[in-house]
Length: 176
Image (cartoon, rainbow, N blue to C red; front, side, top):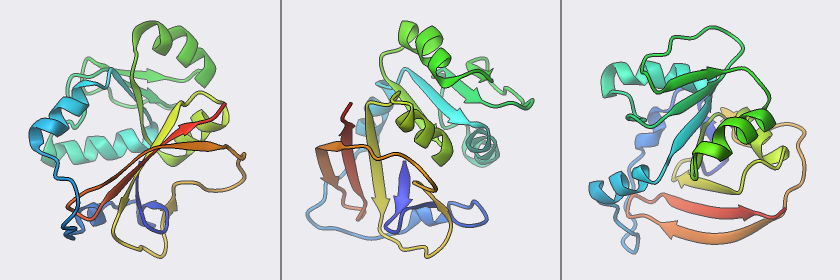
């Protein structure tokens, strides 16, 4: 997940233009396009909620489909267009999805969004880790990553990576 320092993943109108916030941190790591491409190749399948999918469809009009040919499962209870052969709509339980479709086929599944879906994967103990990239901006209001009643989860810090852009990636394992 990508969030502002105050934990927002989108502005109140669901916009994410603030993702382009510019900063420079001299001691940060630089990511080359090749490193980013190599990392994306490690993802076997994306899982996302309907609103994230609709947002990705809108962005794809200007930037192309961000998820390439990687299989993408969209959790929804309403009809949505499947724009690519690798996009599958799913309306069942998360446990059934994980046990029947994800575990048998994929090693590295990435929950691409949104906040409610990520929280549900974490609360149902279906997630192994959380990667949170903090963008150097405070929005003050918006869509929070962790919202509402939830459960306590102990985490184990796996890695911290500061980037030259001023962003910081926190990688936590979820203790079970």
